[in-house]
Amino acid sequence: MNPAIAELPPMDRRTLGGTIYAHLSELLISGRLAPGEKLSLRDSAAALGVSVMPVREAVSRLVADGALESPPNRAVRVPVMTAPRFRELADTRMAVEGMAAGRAAVLRTPQQLAAIRRAETAFRTLAREPDPALAVALNRDVHFAIYAGCGLPTLMAIIAGLWLKAGPVINLDLRANSDRLNSGHALRCHAEALAAIEAADPGAAQAAIAADINEAAQFIIARGILPAEP
Image (cartoon, rainbow, N blue to C red):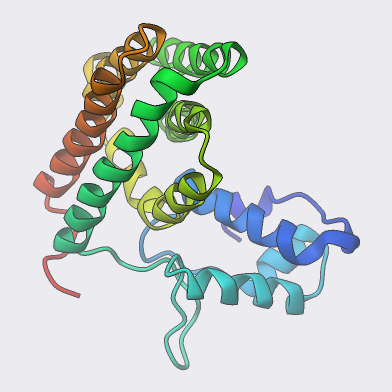
């Protein structure tokens, strides 16, 4: 059983569908599942303490979202991302997430700013004693703390959908080399985004998030680990 699947919490049967979908989405968004990795419905159901049927329904939703794929007569798996598709996804994220960061710079509440500071501090503190798996989750926390200040629930839903597809590949950046946590672009871009949001500078906030996404994409593609074609 995949360790990430094994850690799924038992479910309250009254809220099965949406909660299972949310838990599986979290595994994808936080990079806990890798491109090409198979997802066992039976193992997932056992970890959650439910029957296979509600897991199958949640997986069907994720297949419809493009976050999972279920080829005929083959196991459900995380799609294998090609380099051109990942570049397209990164360009889309730069525009959409940059917009959210820019809005957050002028619309965030004091409470949201405090949450952004906590997330950025947690990520920066981790860099002193790198834990690549945790870095992926904390990187996600920084981004979503920023986007929470944009004031547009529809935009947040779009971003979540993009991360469902990008999350499994994003982890290939932060897990590739722990030294990147000490000197890499993520630390710099996160700090620049926080400073811009503190200064209510939407242009700088948008630029910092776009740079973070772009530099990570360039690094991942340059490593040659994503296929050129399906």
